[in-house]
Image (cartoon, rainbow, N blue to C red):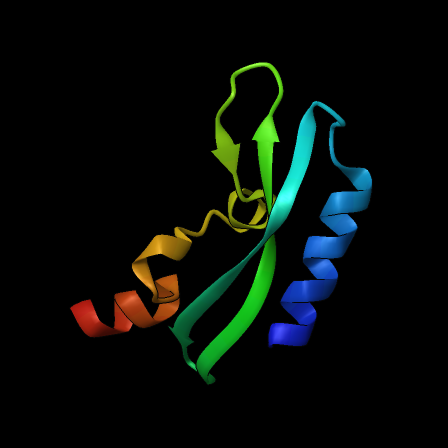
Length: 78
């Protein structure tokens, strides 16, 4: 799963709006239905707003700060 997410992050990086300035890679660890997933994702700063974003998280509508995938979160609530 980590390999797929890294490939997606790279594809997003290649096609991104260049107003998003690459800053660095930051670690991510979260629990998924496949177990614990660890990877380093790209971190960007929007040149216009100054805000920092993870384009991978935006693309997946995922809040990486929670440390849990939406599917696992839903399972725990049910």
